[in-house]
Image (cartoon, rainbow over all chains, first blue to last red; front, side):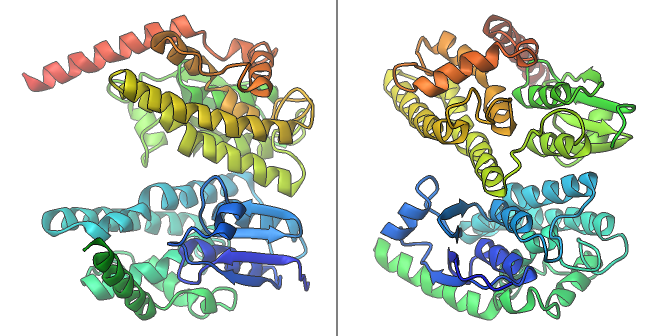
Length: 228
Length: 236
């Protein structure tokens, strides 16, 4: 379905923006990406998301929807003739929502801590991130039921929730030698990551870790210069 | 359609999160077994097994399968018992997104400011926190006016998802007003919300679930005593 009244306010490196774009891709919905710098609270960003002042924001006609996981569910519920994003069984839906919330509330925020932590503190955060990945490995085994993705044969809600974070996870592996995506510890998730890179819905929307690293270094340099 | 056999709630009468689950089940006329968990002391094996990730109440156990996180449980109840009574979530996708947005705001932004009130020391610090709580209420007032479209609840004629999400905190809002000696939910500032709160607290189903402020104050004292005793024992 071609829709021209759909816009996404966001930035390609953001894991949260990636989720929205992946969901739209799954549903074959065309949209316009309005690039926004998440570090610059422009008038447009403040007007579009006055409560949180964050990307992504989905514009659908006159409607404005905020918060990436809420947007993904909205996309699933509006464009019903595409493949389902949420599972159809209520219990499976609850489990998918549970783990997506875990990623956002407990696991991915650890990466923020990693940025500023040094020495022992950094080691502790790296440990917590790895523990989270072990939990997600277990979740994958339960949800996938032997198939390729959390959602089964096709990419689903929890795949989309986590896929956006993969670029940054790999960036940490490269930059910090963290070895998060360790196939001896989380073999199912490592296999899943590889499959994401061949999946038509998500492969072009997974941020390249090397480019993320360059961006991060530039951002750090700017912040340090600004604070001097 | 799911059966009511094998429905258990691990929760606590005093927890707003547990209240949400009970309210949703009662709105759907689902019979359940309620297990009061002493969540503030040593957690039971049963709770740790049902919710290994967070080790918290509430947990809904349906046909031996646990569902955790109160708002996720409420959506599950709505979806598992679709035939029973009115929908909890709105039927329109945009209205659903708005309801979910504000429920998330209530839990992630507004409720933490309520918790800050407990720890704020001194009049100046308290005044700042009360200011933040009021800013939150002002936003929720706007949300109420838009969502209710002139009807009694956020959900319209019936109590819905956002009513449940915010309404279950009302007992604790009254506790904060009592202890802090401050009016938080004020009809002169947020008339829509104040009217809604009165209607919610007198709603047939909600009124038996939302605890009264004096009982909650007593409960708070008990929890503090238990935790202090545990800290002393640990220190010995």
